[in-house]
Amino acid sequence: MDWEALLLSIKLSGLTVLFLLPVGIVTGRWLAYRKFFGKSMVQALLAVPLVLPPTVLGYYLLVSLGGASALGQLLERLFGHGLVFNFEGLVIASIIFNLPFAIQPIQRAFEAIPREIREAAACCGMTPARVLWRIELPLAWTGIVSAITMTFAHTLGEFGVVLMVGGNIPGETKTIAIAIYDRVQAFDNDAAAVMSAFLLVFSMTAIAFTYLITDRNKHTYG
Image (cartoon, rainbow, N blue to C red):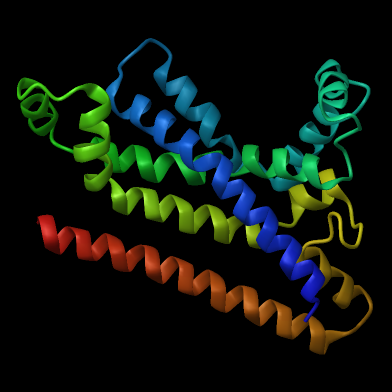
């Protein structure tokens, strides 16, 4: 097991979840409750990472974050260095790539909350912030937990975007998925098998956990 690569992957996954959780709640709630012109296009744009090959998205992120682009130059001034092939750039790429995994489960959870409950809370004099904190978030908790779990697991096993934007720098951008690729290239199948088995078990556990809390919520409120 390449522990350095694993710890880096866990750090990347944790930071991605930390940044995307508030974004997922705000954006998911907004999409769930608001109707506006172009909403389908916004949702389609946010869902692009689900269907776009990771290497294609990685290429566009590489070009966008590179020093040759206006955005890349702006970010270089903000961070004090380039974002391509370093950990900060990897975090930004991971956040963009995981947007649908963070937003969609939370959006569906907010959509499942009956409108009458929110209206009754408002009639009782509760402020919108209090309704969100005391009513909506507790009812949407399964979607929030699903978003956290899926985002973390997806980031942990991501390969294409990581390789395109971060490269393969030990201790900086070399994640466990890249480490598996390296071991295969070096014909070290035993090490590759151990790390692959870890990701397989972790991914299956994350998915099973998501289904478990969803089923429990159905039995509780169904």
